Image (cartoon, rainbow, N blue to C red; front, side, top):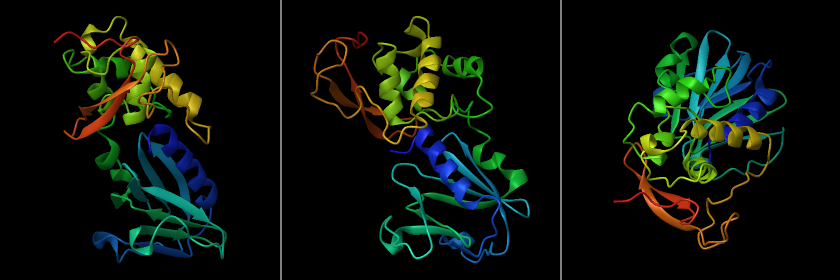
Amino acid sequence: MPEGDTVYQAARRLHAALAGRVLTRSDLRVPRFATADLTGRSVLDVTPRGKHLLTRIEGELTLHSHLRMDGSWRIYEPGERWRGGPAHQIRAILANAEHTAVGYRLPVLELLRTQDESKAVGHLGPDLLGPDWDADSALRNLLQDPARAIGEALLDQRNLAGVGNVYKSEICFAVRAAPWLPVGELPAPERLVTAAKQLLEANKDRPVRQAYVYGRAGRPCPRCRTPIRTATQRDPSGRERPTYWCPKCQPAPPL
């Protein structure tokens, strides 16, 4: 599931394959930008911003993409078979003489003027893996609505950028708080910000993300051996998402 750490890794791979090279092929398979031709332009850099990717291209252009639940960018060598999914799931192709980057199942793909990037990512809070990271600002954002459940507040990218459903569960486990506990009732709430930063930093270079509770329903808690439980919790968009917690280490708040 793409979150701040995996998007960071995707940006690094794309940057290594595309930056400083001239595009020999560009194909944006979304109706609004289907006629856009970036061939002959150099890719300047690929930058992650929370769970967003910004591919900056010569001529003050930025290709903005978001992976959401199951989008991905795959990189192939000349002649290599593309294996990211069926052709009808391809949304973007960017190629140079040495590499081809193929975007599969991208729910968000748009071409912007670089000066207008804020229209796509300006609403985001401090990026956990970005140069703009500001722990104090992230904490202030989280505490703006003290009655809001911790899990929902962590998923709101306006508070801090990069936390998805996996890290929501992992952060709550790290601070021994149920995901439904109101933010304002958590002692020393700065622990949320510290844990978020530590977890994403620890996983940003790992090929396989380490998880203590996410996806481990019924398995023993690594602290107390109590079986991990799972339930649904609404995200900021109103969708029901799975959450995982230890009922002993993270007792539910009273009703």
